[in-house]
Each structure stands twice: as structure tokens, then as C-alpha cells.
Length: 324
Image (cartoon, rainbow, N blue to C red; front, side, top):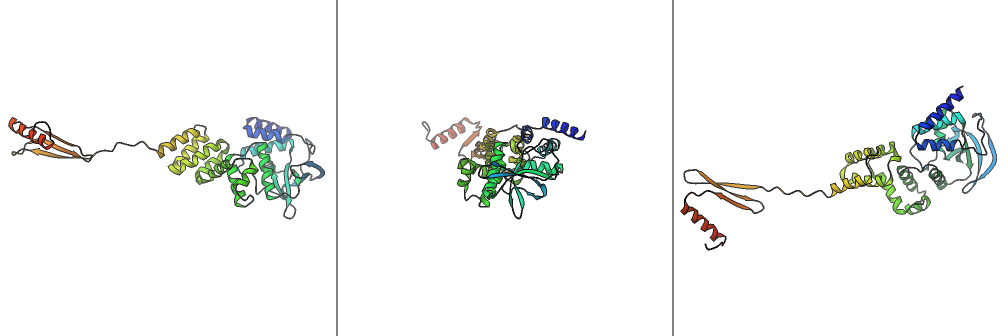
């Protein structure tokens, strides 16, 4: 009954999971020539059967998980707990139907080249062994390239996965430069440069992106880098949250950055100075005003016709107006 219950739970989890989890579950149940649908997971076996690999033949082995180390050059860096849990239930119920890929290094220990979701699921389930195809003599480049190809054939790793993995390949001198790396991953040099630029994002923004990396396409992340450079981390975080929720895309990021880089020019507020005009008894009859722009205005009430004519003529003469 327990096995039936676990199978039912696995089916429900697979049905409720997202497309990534469903794809992994289907692949993990695919029969191969080296597996039986039901087996005792505590039995450790080694088979002399050979299959054709990319560069070398691989030998099937069922090995203790305690002897397995993760790939230091793994192309995928972000693993979702929900997907691991769903795959773990599926493997418990139906067995591991798709082997990983491994090589032997450092005194008999195995380095898992591909199949890290399966390894995490097996460990979570508490199973003692994992089925792998062992390829001898894999180089550091092989560890990355096998992993990259396998992930691309299933669910392509996210742009953030690529950025982190590619940066480490270059830092460790596995590839001498970005041009060599671009040839391996079959991307243009410009694409590789843009992908690596993601890591210029601040730690808080990268942490947020890492929570759901599939929701952040390369086009959005590269624009987010430019936005944070001009608007700061707080603004970049706000935009990243909306991108992750599907409420915003590349267009909105570009528009926001453009507004910040080229703000609308505001009309400069002019400062004026006013001089009140009084007659001999102290009564104010007007004011003279001037502005920094050069503007000058005179607003005055002259009740005497004679004085008014004299003032007007004086102004006409000052500015060479009419017949003054």
C-alpha cells in the first residue's frame, strides 16, 4: 500500500508542477536498456555494457551516493526545491529510469557530469545508490560541455545560470577567453558579453532574480543592468519584482531608463526685484520691477497731466521712441 500511495502522490505532484517538473518526470521515467521498472535500490551493480557517447564510450554503474561529488563546472547553478521534491517522489515510486553521467577522479570518487536534479532527488529520498553512465578521462572542459549540452536538450538553463557558469569557466581558465567560450556554447561573442554583464547587478537584485530565474529573459536582465547603473538598486529591485511577476518587460525598463537619462527640461523660475515708488507725502504711486532675465517693468499712477507728459517724454527720449 505504501508504494501505491507514493505513486499516487507522485502523479499528483507531477500534475500540479510546472512544465519544468513535468518534463523532468517524463524523462526520468523513460525506459533504457540498463533498467528494470522495479528494483531493489540497495543493490550496487556494475555492467560491462557500452554505449556510444559524444567522445567516449560509457559504462553503466549503480554506485553509492556517498561516492558522488557534484560537477564543479556544472552549467546549471540554480535548483528549485519544489522540482527536486516532485522528482524525489517519482523516483521512490517508480525507480530511476534515466541514468546520470559521471567520470572517476581523485582516488575512486565519482564526479557527476550531468543529472544533478536526479542526484538531489535521490539524496532527499534517502536512497543509497544512483545509476550513472561512467565515462573515463573527462577533462574540465568535458565536465562543462557535457553538462551544458544535456541541460540544453532538456530545459535550457536560465540566463543567470549561464552567466554564473560562464564566469567561472573564464576565471578558472578552463577557456582562455570569451571568444573560445562562445564557440563552445554556440552563441555570438556579443551574446556572451551581454550574458556575463548580468553579474554587474547588485547582490540584492541577483538574489531576487535567483528565486525564479526562468522568469527573467536575457533581454530584460541586460536592460536591468543599465537601469540600475543610472537609477540605483532600489529602483532596479522594484522593476525586478514586477518582471518576476510578469507585469513588466524590456520595453518598460528602456522607457524608465530613458526618462532618467533625459529628463524634461523645466522652465527656469525667474527672480524679480521690486522698488516701490512714493511721492513726497509718502504715498505709494507705483513700482519698478526687474528680473534676472533683463526684463524691466514700470507701473505708476501720475495724477498730474503735466507730470505725466513729462515722464512719458523722458522715457521716449531714453529709448529713442517717436517724437520725444
